[in-house]
Length: 340
Ligand code: UT7
Image 1 (cartoon, rainbow, N blue to C red):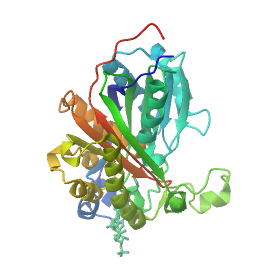
Image 2: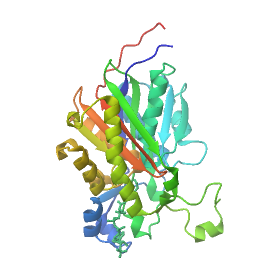
Image 3: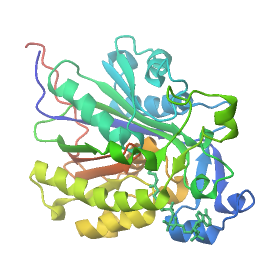
Image 4: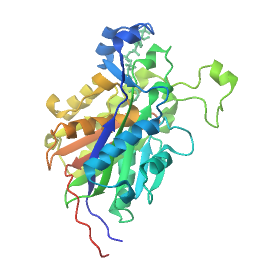
């Protein structure tokens, strides 16, 4: 097996459903206002999947675009990881469904649950397989259909979330480029602050769990807010330190898109100017595991990221979980070695 010293992103893709739900429309559904949502979160509208669309449908489109951008065929993929808290079914995994629908015949595939930090956990995991030489190409997808598990009568949560999918193809890149560091963390003691209470082995679905509305997202918003402000800064700083990089060297920050005030706090702590920060929550709301890869794909396709740019991706979420990654951008694949 030939070890790969540098692993990076060879191509990205994303997809969001067509249907737009605006704050104005939400005003007719729950006791809220466009003014409250915009001033407290920065969100103006979000995308909602149709009754027929499940996470694998969104993920497939994003994956196809990422493969095309990378110039890799599905049958070259060695591994598929799907980060999601809204899989089509508990099992088979959504990654298994994608493996079949893409025709990724030789790929191992599994889902990974780390809520909004899922994409970061996914790229950290996939990159290890490539670095140690076991695999060459991996597809990592962050996808959510949160609209299917949100309580549309609960104004505390239903205004925040949206549906979408983002994907990245990982592979060996030129020496010195690609992922420079990862910082991952968790604090299970805070698990009750953000959760889907029923439908698992603790509280299987029953008439009672349905009557008690336990199949919807529960969140203690204020507590998650405080946690988020703390870890976004500290995790980004930890990843920078591991990469031997200073804050001033950051070209782009791609943060999890939960709340503009949380992003602002991280930006302030890192001393960044706002033109270095990728924000799309105004159009999509919080898409959990899909937030970071969709934001990354948008900025890549806008041509704003140049070879050698230094990116910090950072996120937090249910679990509680958090993660950050420092990445020196290059989509140039390292030549394949036929020996070793
Ligand atoms: O990806 C990870 C998942 N989640 C998050 O990252 C969310 C983190 N938390 C947040 O973003 C914020 O805490 C929220 C946006 C959820 C809430 O903002 P806040 O500034 O922390 O507001 P709050 O919870 O202190 O609520 C203030 C008031 C409350 O009324 P009272 O009790 O003070 O009378 C809420 O009932 O705002 C009320 N409220 C609303 N009012 C209008 C809560 N939701 C709404 C709403 N429209 N949609």
